[in-house]
Image 1 (cartoon, rainbow, N blue to C red):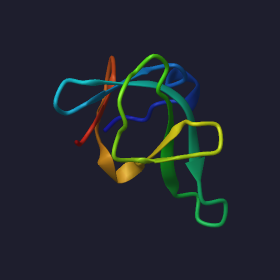
Image 2 (cartoon, rainbow, N blue to C red):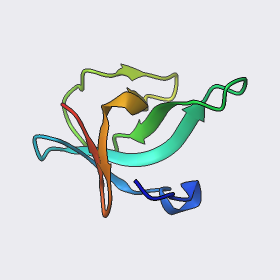
Image 3 (cartoon, rainbow, N blue to C red):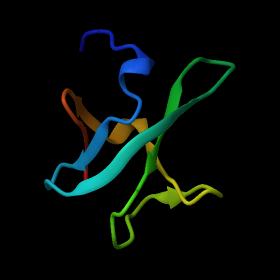
Image 4 (cartoon, rainbow, N blue to C red):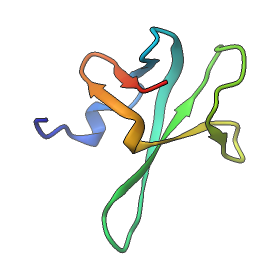
Length: 79
């Protein structure tokens, strides 16, 4: 996968592998000691229903980066 700057991912739409809209990318977390990316933080916006991912204190979903399948016009998450 080619390098992608984090600033180009901000507010990018996130979809499930089943075609469902999950929200928009709000932020990315990483381990400061190793530099390993940990989670995509998704703003669910108007999305209804619960997803299988944990939520942070602001109500955003925390999706493990291992679930990312593709990053193009949208970010695709394995569901």
